[in-house]
Image (tube, rainbow, N blue to C red):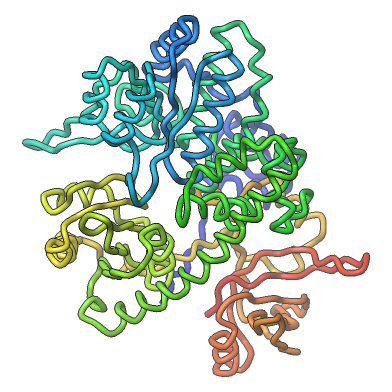
Amino acid sequence: MERWVILRKGADFEAISRKYGISRRLAALIRNREVIGDEAVNLYLNGTLTDFYDGMLMKDMGRAVELVLEKIRENKKIRIIGDYDIDGVNAVYILLEGLEALGADVDSDIPERIEDGYGLNVRLIERAYRAGIDTIITCDNGIAAAEEIAYGKSLGMSVIVTDHHEIPYEDTDGERHYFLPPADAVVDPKREDCPYPFQGLCGAAVAYKLVEALHEASGRDVEDMDYLIENVAIATVGDVMELTGENRMLVKEGLSMLKRTSNPGLRALLHCTGIQKEQLSAYHIGFVIGPCLNAGGRLDTAKRALELLRAKQKKEADILAGELKALNDSRKDMTAQAVKQAVSIAENTAVKDDRVLVIYLPDCHESLAGIVAGKVKERYYKPVFILTDAKEGVKGSGRSIDAYSMYEELSKCKQLLTKYGGHRLAAGISLKQENVEKLRRLLNENCMLDEEELTEKVVIDMELPFSGITEEFVKELTLLEPFGNGNTKPVFAGREIVFSNIRIMGKNQNVLKAKACDKSGVCLEALYFGDVKAFQEELWRQKNRLSVTYYPGINEYMGRKSLQVIITHYK
């Protein structure tokens, strides 16, 4: 069952409407997104590049800039070490572009998911040392690599950490103690002592802030690096960061740039996935572009995605884009099979009564564990860990619900883990096989979630009669974009909607189309994408009358426009 909750947040909507030239309804929707006060509303509606925060506000940014510029002047070898996901690859690309533009002797390395695991390790450090590297700059990793960084320092290398993950900590005697790695500079907005006003940046955004600061300090035109914001946008959406504050502005600007990108690799990827540039949205990054860029790191090597971003010739870009798309298609098939196995375990074994699902799929490709965990979480609305056999022991990924902090809960079980990291809603772990069942038991013994917290909440912005849906209002809703985590599409509700002319459509018979009429007799075309069979059965049980949540849209067909609603939930 779902809990439907209507938001009732107050403000002077009339005044906001007059001041910003928007409808009262849009003013209410903005307030529902916790955007409060003139400055915040103005930034939300009109924020641009000039409103971004100065990266020099980050703790240790000045030290990092000073050190990198010194190494460039001395012609020392610098190596960027990233991570194998969409955030890490884009962060590496951003730093390579930014440092090369300053004349640095710079190269990069990215760990292999299966051979190396996440982030810095001793092999990567030794590989850098053998290559005569003087300075390592991490991106999207490093904050939890204290031992590895200490080893690099013992070999005489300088190390700069740029990261966005949680700072490792220990709770002792009721006090929390944080541990920073012994790097020459540690740039991470989540540092307790970091005064940067926005903590929610992805790794690529932190890397971009370093590039900006380096160019500013070198007397270069920072605007020359603006094109990298499209990569920040891809990483922000792909890493599922909250689209609030600075992130939303970064993605808004980045999407605008991406529509006219001159990057041959991104152009090739847009073309081979069939995305129309003018229709490009955060959805396409999250569900089309992102999975293709991630596919290399999952099933082959993330270096392939980096090669795509760095490609200079159209022919090379087309080949690489095609390969990544093919890898992603293969990944989809493997994922579907693994989800099927996970669901069978969740419904037919002792796991079914657990509040935290720990599902062991020894044969699942370890790179797919996070995706499978996410899909299982959506199905049962519980925190989920998918564990699989790895080269050494067992590895896994977790995806969580709002009420459950994965990182904190794993911290209580660290005696069973060889490695763990992540944040509130997602985590990665490594452990010995004999500890799999112990971890399942301990996570569930510690779990304090109640029935309400384990019931998915459908948050409704407002009840809206169909008469309120106009072409002008649908266009006005685009001012709220980009949509995503933290800035969701508005959810409207209608009571006792009567459905008729019901048809099943689509190649896979997965779209339901109908005529929908509200209580005042206004009728619109309605579409439902989802479990069509279950929706049909509910319509039959309720004599074609349901309360629904929906999002309004405009259907354009052969030059003609008509209003429609996309049904998202029903009861």
